[in-house]
Length: 165
Image (tube, rainbow, N blue to C red; front, side, top):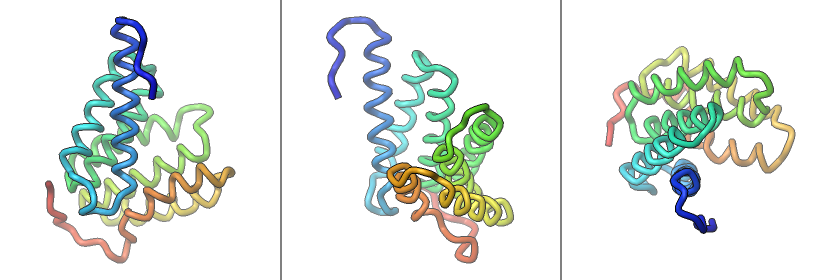
C-alpha cells in the first residue's frame, strides 16, 4: 500500500485505517492459536478508530463487523455480540448490500453468538451463514467468506464458557 504523498490528516487516516483493516482481516483467517489476540484486537480497533475520522457509514459499519469478529475470535463474547447485533441491523436492512457482505454478516453474527453462549442464535445464524455463502455469486468472494467461516464452531460443538484472551 502506497503511503500518502501529502500531510493531510484525512489521507493518513485512510492509509492507517486501510492498513490496520487489512492486517486484522488477515489475522481473522488464521486458526485460533496461530495469531496473537492482542495484535488482532489492536489492529481491529485501530482500523475502526481511523474510519471514524474519515469513513462513511459503510466504512464504519464494516469496521464494526471487524470488531465483532475480532472480539469473537479472542473469546470476548459480550462485546462481540453487542458489536455483531449493531452491524447486523445495519447490513440486513441497508439497500444494496452485496451477497458476500450478507454472508459475512451471518458468519460474524454466528461466531459472536457462539462466543457469547447464545446457542439458539448461534445455530440459526450458522445455518443462515451456510445458505448465504452458497448464494455468493463470485468464487473469489465466496472463498473470502469461507476462509473466515471455517473457524466458526458448528452448532453441535457449542460449549459455553470459552476462555478470553
